[in-house]
Length: 147
Image (cartoon, rainbow, N blue to C red):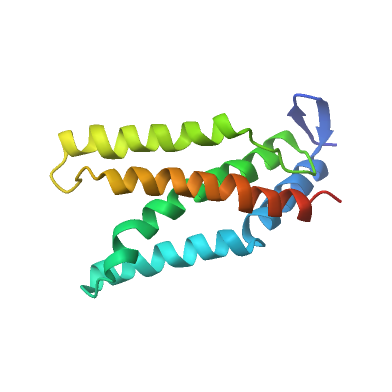
């Protein structure tokens, strides 16, 4: 019998597979995650094709970046911890991600690369995305998986 180490003790491999697929369903079967992914790819496509959509091109990717990161982290934690219910992130943890994102992409990256620029509206978009995740997406996920 094959066992996988977990913080709660030894598990059988079937439990690891079960938690992996539960996390995968949590990740992919979410309309908000689907919206984040489709909009991000749509904007990336319009940028490379040269058909920019002004407002969406400027801030939609920044808005969906933080919720996308948090949702993926939530899915990974479901897989690693093997829990059946998603963790409810407190507001300070959610706001820490836009702070770090803004610091990296709006302060550090413009100083070391030529294709990154600093924009205060990007910072606002990061925080708006974090608040959107906290008050809308996370509430939806907790209700959906509270069973």
